[in-house]
Length: 259
Ligand SMILES: NC(=O)c1ccc[n+]([C@@H]2O[C@H](COP(=O)([O-])OP(=O)(O)OC[C@H]3O[C@@H](n4cnc5c(N)ncnc54)[C@H](OP(=O)(O)O)[C@@H]3O)[C@@H](O)[C@H]2O)c1
Image (cartoon, rainbow, N blue to C red; front, top):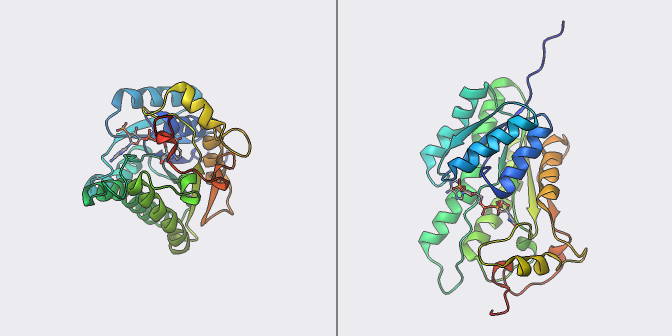
């Protein structure tokens, strides 16, 4: 009997809730073993692991503050110690705090750059080292944002961190080929924030050339496609109903009737 090939392993950061959870579940349903990363949301992360297991099979829980370099450097080795291998990383976790030209500070910039840009680069570096040791190939998917193609002055540090990550996408795709493909996935407004009512979110979600922005299922399916299509690297898939083709003066979270 031929040896069975173990299911591939993916680390999904920020997978306790929201888009990260949706991505983890879609990948588990597609046969991936999922390392569910979280920082504070342990109870939600436990639920994600349980839901992944219900969908398909093995998944496990890993905590780390992505703003802490030592913790990020330890993360992939912990996943490898648990599963025996890792084949892909999806960087969904993100700091997302409002600042602008008037309130910008080194503190805000550093916070966003470390977790949103630095951690994905360190994880790509670690994945490359691991894949080289196995003579295997894999992929990194970085969650970006349509607002990089449609800028406004809000969320300055967040936007800078994602712009840097988009540039890193290109540089890492060149530097880490052929072992690691690096792909960006840029959602439009997909999930609401605490700054919007449900009615406001529903109206803003329609603001696109297609009359609908992205759904969590759209984003998760695109991440899965990017991980599994062996010829894509160094580019970004915009999944936003075309919102990047429009001009918005403010971030969606601040596009309320009072602003
Ligand atoms: N939601 C949207 O409509 C939308 C639109 C465009 C782009 N995106 C992008 O899609 C991705 C997912 O969006 P989302 O709305 O699901 O994200 P989110 O809810 O804002 O954040 C996801 C998770 O990131 C984790 N996180 C934040 N800082 C961290 C740190 N220093 N260390 C470790 N974990 C940290 C948190 O985990 P814990 O709760 O465990 O602490 C949080 O639950 C993001 O990269 C975002 O930029 C989203």
